[in-house]
Image (tube, rainbow, N blue to C red; front, side, top):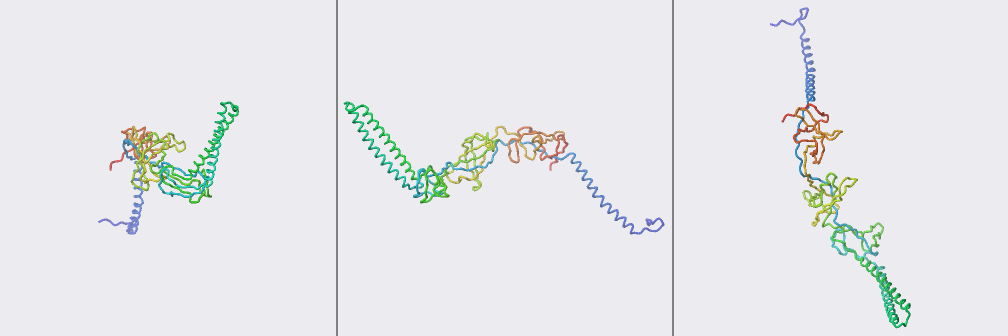
Length: 387
């Protein structure tokens, strides 16, 4: 049997002292173990920082075509404001907003009593000038006959001939006045210049309108009506400078709109400005689209899809592999010696999450994906083990 624990004077130690010693040992253990774990974790973290673990990816070939999505404005094929060419009162209008009209169709009729009176007076003046000319012409002819028998002097005969010519010129002037007033009277009928839809009507029966589009009533615009041709539409889009060279007339494009989800509207590039806007650095491009079904409305917002082809597509990388440094765009490549090598690259086309690398990258490079911003050239690295 074990000998009992005794004190220095031969007496037994109290059991309470033993219990206190055990508790103190337990508390000491509780305080030391977490510190040991923290120290081990810190050591492991330092080791990992010495050789960070990275994942590598291989460059892939960029697609030969790129779809460019641009905001576009849908405009009518033809757009005209209709004004009065003669002054008067609106006697009747025949087309309201939304009406489909044809070229030459009467849209409104203007009552012009003053113009009618002036036309009657001009016709009377023309008839009087016609009578004066006939008399002067016959007189000149008689004097020319008498001149042949020397019954009158040549000077008097020339005077009668000159008077006949003057009367003829006066007749022509009066006839021109009649023609002008008749032309103005023909504008009593306001007609459509082309097939289209009436989008604005600013007049009503009895409204005073004046020639040249001046407003006839307070607060009323000068135009009587507004017409737009909608069976064909023009689509205007601003193409960025880097893609402007790829857009050519005759190129097929297609549109999408919010009111027709999933539907494509086929269009064709008709023309471009052939000049870059110095303010926006974009190229103004127009595409034409058939709209006989009336699905698209002028003034609407649409999205234009352009398929841009590349003659020599390069390699591409995800955008997460790029490093933006003060000296330019850089990628980190893992060398055969397990160390990082930084390469300066040039970005080509942008595909969203992927970008085309024009220069600075080889197809067999092991590119580090999502590298740390603090990565250095020549830094030792470790590749991640496959899951």
